[in-house]
Image 1 (cartoon, rainbow, N blue to C red):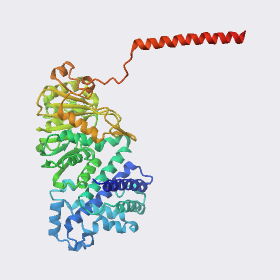
Image 2 (spheres, helix red, strand yellow):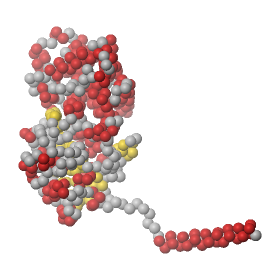
Image 3 (cartoon, rainbow, N blue to C red):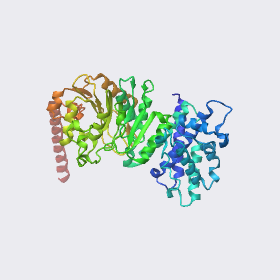
Length: 515
């Protein structure tokens, strides 16, 4: 990527964050994110649709056509291809032209969004489009108390997004849209305190997770994230996979409705067509989707840490295919291993799952120890990696990554101590590309490197009662200086001798003064 391009991105990003903050006024940034992200999405699908309709013919400018030229056949064809339909009059560019003087902008937008969503009803894309704009609530009092106030604030957002320069609509620019969206989401996450980490995994960590899950696979059938948040991990997998084939696309499940909509928008914004992704809304642990899509060759996940779940409060779960083999359910107050067993169940025999984990699950006793025993005894754990603290939003803890595999060459488990690999940046630490490279190389080689990587035998792990903490198996390097005791004692004796001589001198002076 040329410097120009990098500079263009940087300018675009500072501009977009400035708009997001100026326009929101007294509205909390977290509450306001739906309007900025939704407007960016509306502009993207408008330009994407126009570009599709014009298909390179410079004599056609879709935005200038009257709605009346659209025949039912044209509309039908477009929806089958793109998944939705936008009339020329409904395009972002045409709404933006009159936005500032339009006192009914909020009701106009609500109607347009409803019609775009409605265009997919009865088509294959219906589930991907339905409710996409649900969180863009044009009647919200956060925008103002009167229709006029609401319209004025929405007009300011539209003006701001209209001014962003994405250039012509080709591949580079599509990337700019996707990057701008990711940039906004990550900034909102960084500023949202604790809840930020719930829907966004920072790109640098996502890159490592994707590299681990995809390692050594020239093609994968499909990629899955059982707790996908805004889809950032799945999309990072797409970026890592330009040289490989993803045959059947991207799958994810998310429990939070707002975040589920962010993920679907994020897919479109990264130019993944409706028939190449499938994001479901539901509780993964109790209402899993995609049972008939199993198994998956690549699973990436950063599930919520130590959340409550129904566990043994639901008598049917112990017989669930996902949990039954371990013979015990994850504790009610710590669902971590439920997500891990879920992923294992969805994993193909040739694939890998890379899962971010809370470190406590690696050493605690009780049900969690029994589940670790099941995973170790069946040789499903390839590697446990300990990362630096403060890499994620909303938590400063040093998390681990668990890599699961069903095709290991031996019964050893690899441990990597990567806690010293990071660069400090403002409030968070980040993994640089060379850090990621070092971890991936060690993961691939499986060679022992003092204080960094070690492959441990099954016998040593059972002797440690299935403790999987990296610190149990990799010793910390002692960076203190070696001390020569005899030399030190001689130095101390010399100091004491000088002190005594000095004291005698002082006593002599005092005696003279007093005398």
